[in-house]
Length: 454
Image 1: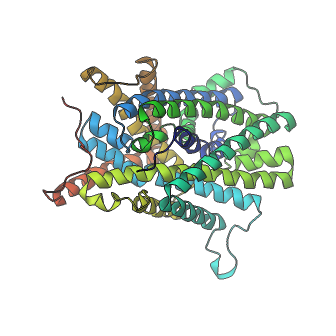
Image 2: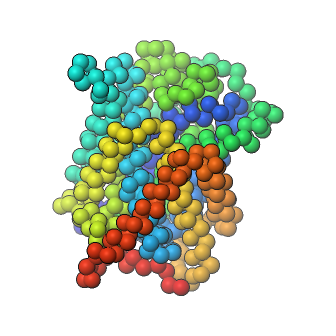
């Protein structure tokens, strides 16, 4: 009998995918262009509403098509195999491997700062950065845990997620009690309005979008969740609501206690906060704990991502080597492959560019999925829907408008990263054509792979 993920693990996946790298690192990039406390808090609130709208709509898609694969599976069913393949391709090369790399890179920075480690190894190995080595080690260890045993991986995920949440809550409380106000204004003012309508606000939304990414995490393991028609919507919606509240409180505390000038352009926002509030020694200890918290984020993505890669392997000949499960019922080959990709990103990519690139690229396919829910509703009202999107059609329309605005600003103001994302997506069409050409006639996908009937 196959091991199923419980409601607790599914919800932990959502929370752990969201709480981590983005909220502990991205504020430093946001304050480069924004200086109003109101605008910065509104930025996180608006991003949270968009994530909630996405979770509410995805719940309908996840219950309607309860198979592992996320956007790959949904877009295949809603549109066409080529469209679904492109979503799977992006998940394979970018969607999870790159965020795992970013989480591990952030962990390396936090741990290096907390332990006052040298930036590079001494002597002949000075070309090796300490934070890079830490990041690579993290990916290797977590990949091994989740590739070897699903039960151990699930227990590990639940434990570090609970610790993560309790620690973040304690940061909020202690920051409010012990922190000193920076006198930053959180009221609506002319300066706040100027920030909200500036290009910097919407380019900063890419960092917020990255921080909230993971609201759809449980959808990627839908086929391995116990009682998916009940547990999937609960995990997606409750996990997202919880994280929105957590993010708003945490960012308020950061802005309330740390001068903007200190965190501008910095990755280790949590470490700077801890040093300001608790002093250098206690701050380093807190920074070390925060680095441990980032394990939860990386671990959750190492659980979710390979499930999509495995489904690709089941349905496409060129990726058939990823479609096998181990004796312990884990997609071990897919997990190891994603780990290797993450290591490649760690070695070759810059932190900020990867965050924007991820935010833009993934927004393309979440947009298409939410639009697909509306299309299927209109074309196939007869399909059974154990769950229907709350607030339909206002909720999905809000998400679509938000995503369009974000994508438009990305092309205008972060052109390099956006075009790179589009280019990587188009390469998927070439890979699809190659698969079609080399696929034997007797090769049959394990999934039905067919879109809904016209």
